[in-house]
Length: 189
Image (cartoon, rainbow, N blue to C red; front, top):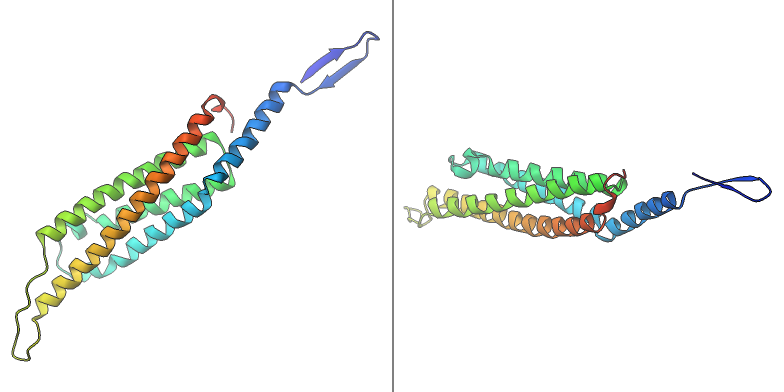
């Protein structure tokens, strides 16, 4: 609030220019964040997380490998869902602190996805598909089909985790740039 007194001793109360600048910066932040499409990125992260979790259910019927023992699809899927949910919240309520929180969760989801891809690769190499041993009915034995199914499910999960890594990395970079642009206005909510 600014006060001005004129020569006839009348007092005028006006709003401060700094308040206008900060309000304008908040609107610029909101428009700038919405250019990065946080809603579409958040929805894609949530969907990928649920796909990873749901596609991993058949692995529970197979032998326990490192992927199932460490719960890789579940913690990588949940981290993706959480990062997407924070992005959706940030889209509704734009603020620097939410941009930072979304950036942290998105980068964590990317790191978890990279770790998941590595574990999937190691598990597929450690537990490869067995060769087809023909039985009396001229079909392959049961172990061949079980290991083939397991390797294919893990390959799908690895591909989904790679997509999640790409989306999280790009979105994390966009959020980092936006945060750097508005770093001077951290005290605003």
